[in-house]
Image (cartoon, rainbow, N blue to C red; front, side, top):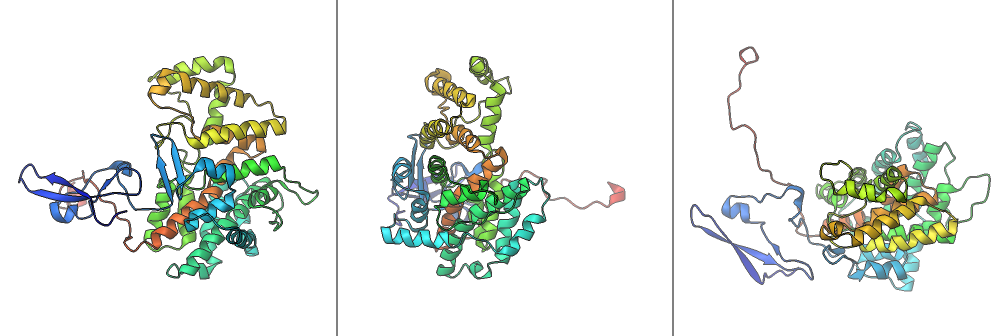
Length: 433
């Protein structure tokens, strides 16, 4: 972002005639932003922006989205190129460091992550403190927050080296925590990580291996898992990322901040959308009923809504959805699964891309549209869908947290409000009310 604004925005008070010059700042790409940091001090007014849909809360060099064009960039690299040519570990390095690694840098990074996947053995008692039927996301929130009790050295956020160590530990340990949450809910023994496996293969074996037989990772599923992790790694200033940044702005330790992000992600409007897609496909049931439900979706008086279409940011085809559509076919073909939900999904996608109602409203399939189908075919229960999202998004959260801590202008977050309550009034004793 340029320190010297190339232009200004003039605000005029219609009552007094006073004018205020607000700087306009330009990023490397994307729309300009009006710098309102001194607006209150100068004009005694705030801006009003529920949901912060038109407000930049920070500057960042990590991820860029152009929703109108369907563009997603990490460090300037299109998501399509990263998905085709990289693996998740390389994308993690990019998000943390701003550049793709050399071979030596990647080998060192992978080695560090691989040798930090184990969690403190006493943490197994935390898992056993939960009810057996506890939701895995509830376990994730509690266990991740408790990491600060086991890794004290990484809570010193003033030390750059400790911040990087904490970031690497979070990326390494999250798959183990997630897999153990699943194993506990199933009543199966915890499976420890293996250092000879890739990040994604290791996660699959911790999820699905059992001690009584050898587990061999299917390379097609490993590739699909890695792709899902890449496509969910970061997504700019979404709700959970903003939660992590707000939590971190107070100086909270990184484990607590990531736990807060997981709690936010748990909301059905954020991380639970792919599960809602499967429920919708089950409700439709058969391709022969697609026209019926399309008509219902167009009826504003009908409560039915098509899930997995449209996006808060993308007003074009979500680039991640295109990549997952291809992966869905590969996974189902390899597993020999004749999935009627995929046939339904393809029928819905075709209509969404051709029907004027959807085209005019830019209701294109998003990343959640296909991810649930893939995960279900791979054997993941729906309760784990959001957990997998958290495993992938951890690198984005911790990268954004690290960037914020290292930003010299960052302050504790303190949004303003438009107060609509009572004006000052005198207290009345209870027997006189």
